[in-house]
Length: 265
Ligand SMILES: [Zn+2]
Ligand SMILES: [Zn+2]
Image (cartoon, rainbow, N blue to C red; front, side, top):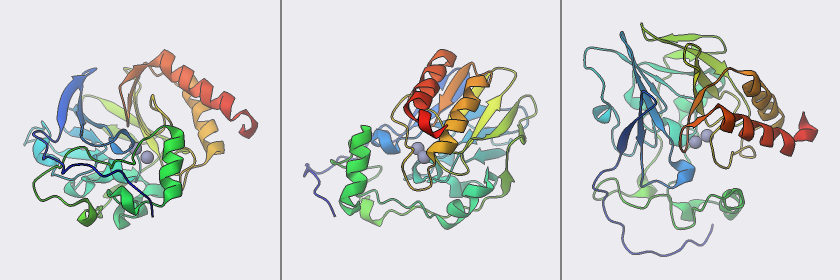
């Protein structure tokens, strides 16, 4: 167990989530969550169905917050099974994930406590070495009055459809190709829209410290994934954490990773 900083009682957030339009897509974030666990929720409105990519921490219901059309079905694609991406996954009847992540989603195994005093010190120190500060807690405000981080657990969700490399998510007027991109986790997937070069990358690549030494991560596989990204005709990256970025930044991040782990290639 570890020592965490004492702070004054936390206030309830006036607005738990924030919604913006980025590059023609909707981005929903949870600004009162520390960057380590503050994942991006992306939404694409299609002619026949809406697509949601990842579901955030899920401390308050997500579905009512989504600007979806009541007449259109909604598909959630979970890029992987980590808690910060599947917290609200149980709210979706149509839930797609890779077979190597499905069991963890259905059994809610990535139930990392939101109360950092329950984290082993080596876990906290490992995240700090990467540049993630969590010692003061995982939240800077409460999602609702009476919320208790200690009592909060990840809920199991039923994966209705397994997806794998080459599968197509068809919204009627636009398509997304599933790419299997292991490294951060065994069944991490990205969604690539070939017609526009838009790439929803999950935690495979974002502009921040990448997590490649956590349980289930594999640096050799990560190197192969980065090599693959170099040759993919991506124009814009809509990542699982942090801001969207363009092709040149993707190339910089991928090349830097490959230089760092040259010996594993
Ligand atoms: Zn994440
Ligand atoms: Zn992750």
